Structure formats: structure tokens, C-alpha cells
Length: 446
Image (tube, rainbow, N blue to C red; front, side, top):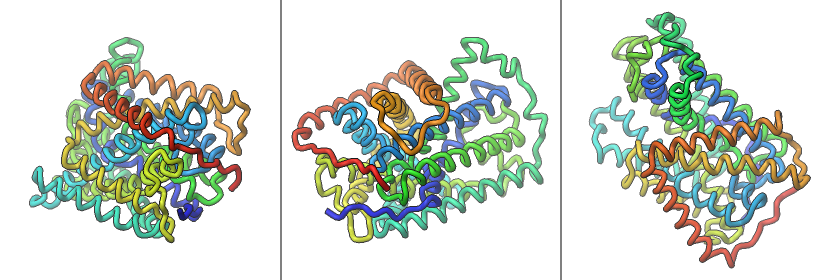
């Protein structure tokens, strides 16, 4: 078995974080928030809180990743902190909800925006074929060469972030908006003092958290990052911090363009903002921008996901062949497996249901992983990077994540039941395969 090579630097690692985070969520979530919160300041506060929460999670993952600089992310951390069964379950979730479903969701969203630019592609089956074609094309790139795939990923991400920055500047400097749209509505932030206001806030935070998801992406490729004890924490925090700034500014532009009452419940809020700021013709330009952002997201997940399966296969938790790397540092069989699963989700799934399925499941294992920081501190395990604000940082992340999970179960019992069935299936598979599992030694140096 050819081992992975450390050949990815800070720029590529941070780009993977940014690309995983910036997807369709930022261009749709604000409309759903406006329907429940109404007040601009409260809406912006949710994006600030979501960013702080993501930074808290990134700081905790930075400590875990610099302590155990291997590919695999949660699979490795939970296996070492609790039990191989817990690690396997997180890897099983990654195989389904963690990567395959989000890749399919991002590809379907890409086809939806492509249909706005090219009407001939605006159909149910046409859209699914476009989504599947995108996945195959990007997978072919990442199955060829890790370094080349990383460079292309970086170029996509720089282009995406730059276009968003241009949209922000153009909207605020020359766009036809109105600053009075950001005025207080109703009780403003005071609504959070009531139970109904807190419930509306929590519901909005679920959408915001989903838009911020991906802040942990660099942890999945830690085994291929150069000098991971230094590079991984910087990539996680730099990428997450940059996205937080872009999200806050982008939402200011959305609110500057359109009063909350007019955007309430609008799914394509980015398109609405572009039309209000620059006229009807610019809506097509924004659709192209969003499509570019989604290509980058699909690429980043197709790069990160197979590294989890390769790490599991190295421990014989999955078929050994998935841990085979080619001479260019690519786990090709794992990439192909990820591609097949993602395409299957494209043809059997629905975009809205996929998004709900993903958000709920990831919150559970992210909270469990962050709790591993407490476990390793109690065991006196040292790490080159120490989580800032400990123990408040991980405690806040865990508490808020569990609150969101509770509200998701309460509000969507069917989707919650599907997750339960998926976990039971994973447990059965573990019981049947665990006898052959073995631990791969955790690297202690760079």
C-alpha cells in the first residue's frame, strides 16, 4: 500500500476550508431568517454568532488535528478518545451524510443555478444529469493528482472569494440600495428576551450553522499537509475567519438591497438582491457567480471525503483497497467510491431533504468530536496547539450544537428517524467487521 505524501501547504489547506464553507447556504438562508426574525440587527447577530461558533469548533479541531496529524478527521479523533466503534460510526456518517449527500446537494444546486443561465438545462432530469456530470468531471481531476487537484481547488476558491468581494463592494458603493432597510423592526434584538424570540433565533441558527459547515475540512486531509502541527491550526482558523467576514458583509449587502419583509421566505435571496441593486439583467451574472461557488464546494468535498475512507480502510474498518494511494498521492479507489455514492444521492435525493439530513447529522458528531478535547486534556495528552478560551470554547460549541439537534428532532421527526436508521445500519456493519480492525499508529512528529 502506497502511503500518502505530505505535499499540501497552508494556501491549499485554507482554500479547502473556504471552498467547503461557501456554498448555496449563504445565498439562500437569509430569506428563511427574514421570515422568522424580521429584524435586520437580529439577523446579522445570528451570522455573527454562527461565525463565533464555527471559530470555536475550528479551534478545538486545531488542537485535535495537531495532536494527531493524520487524515480522517473525526474518525481518528473519536476512535482515540472513546472507542473504535464511535470512530467507525463517525466515518460511516461521513460516507453518507458527511460528504456524499452534501456533494449531491451542491451539485444539484449548481444545476439549478445553471438552469437560470442556460434555460435548456432547467428541468428535473436535465438538472440531475448536469449535477452528475459535474461530479464525474471534478472526480476525474482529483483521481489523477493530489497536488494538481489542490492547485485547481485553490484557483477556484480565490476566484469565488474574489467575486463575492467584488459583489459586496459593488453593492455597497454603486448599488441601488437603501440603508433604511437596516433599521430596527419590531422589538429588535429585545425579541431574544422572550421564549418565542429565542425559538425563532434557534431556528435561524440551524440555517446559519449549515451555511458555516465545512470549517473542519482541513482536518480530513491532515495526513497530506506539510508541517501539520503548524499548518493545520492556521488553515482552520484563517479559512473560517475569512468566511465569517465575507458572510457578515454579504448579509449587510442583502439587507441594504431589500427590506426583510420583501425577502421573507425567498429561497433565491442572492438573485433577488442582485436584481434590486443592479437591475434585472444582473440576476444572470449572480447565478453564474453562485454556480462557480458551488463547483468549488463540490471539488473541495470530493478531495476531503475520500481521505476519511482511506484512513478507515487502513485500519481495516472498510475494505483495504480503499486505502490504496497511487504514485501521485491519490486514494483513487476511495475517490471513485465517493463519486458513485454522490451520484446515487443525486438521482434518489431531493435538494431540500438532503440539506435537512446533512445539517442534523453533522451537528451530532461535531459536538461529540469537540468533547474529545476534554477527554484528551484529562488524559494529559499534549498538543502543539492549545484551544484558546478553554474550557469555555468547547463548552459553548457543545451546548449550542445540542440545542440545535434538539430543535431539529422536535421540528423534523421524520428526518431524525432516517438518521437513526442510518446509525443502526452502521452499528450492524461495525459489529460484522470489527474483528478485523487494527489501529494505524498516530504520528507524533511532522
